[in-house]
Image 1 (cartoon, rainbow, N blue to C red):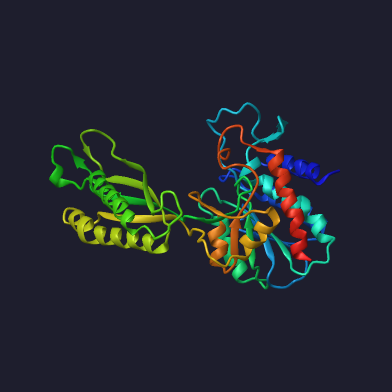
Image 2: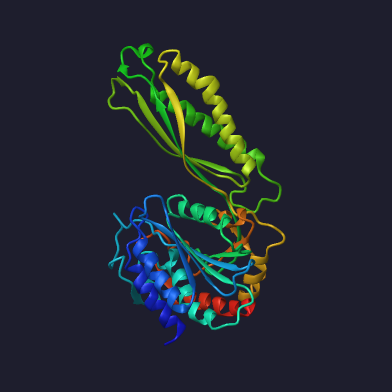
Length: 385
């Protein structure tokens, strides 16, 4: 059986696990752990606080620093309200494509790496190869952040990370960060005919959104020289503003969901500091002058640093040699790569499938893309021996 056939069989098994982020991923992690253990890998499983989710970290080769990490996330986005032409959790092959939820984002890459594990285990490796599979990437990279804490305490310190998100096998050396927040406004309900006797949470939320819009425009002037991103500046998006119960009731509660995609951490600090000052000196005093219990609290949903392009990047050098690529790109979407970079590793994103197929009904990865990925992983053997 060819390695492509082995990969297809394994991918079919992985697609059958409905690892939507709201579900447990333990069955899939145990399945991968069994495959890797059978191949000769030393496997570690690290559970989250609930015990219902886990990260997997496995090693083949010598127990030394400087290894190469092949990284993927086990969770997938929901399929509810999507018009699929087949069962999203049953892989279907047609027209030289593999269809199913997660085929390109990103169980295809995971299947390819695990299918290659027996080959790696037969080699006299001079540097270790690691497999890192995480939970909850789609909802805030929570698994990767937990994995980072585990790796900080681990005896082995990998040097290179290849994150197999769908890039059509292009090398991605940079992407923006993703910071997500929910800001809660607590006011004082009352009758709409007496606005001065209440604290209108929706109106204060609207003023907050207005400040977000001002900051959104200000960030354009902070565009770093030579920024390669599109757009080249840090962006802010207001996702929802929710509050109120009726036309004639002063709303006592409101909520704003918003995000920013920083091209540099200083922009994120600028926005957060500015909003904190605006709330502390303008909004909250006015609210509490009417109701001492009124308040504004911002909940951090996720703060995931971007992947910063750097001149000296061993991960880029390795993958460029493997793929024969002459350059590397940047993208606006986020991945777990910045988390690995923050650990001191060099990192790139490179994997089979197109981001244009991710999260959509009838998600697929082409057999050509899977073959290219397996060729890259096969050539990686030379870098390990």
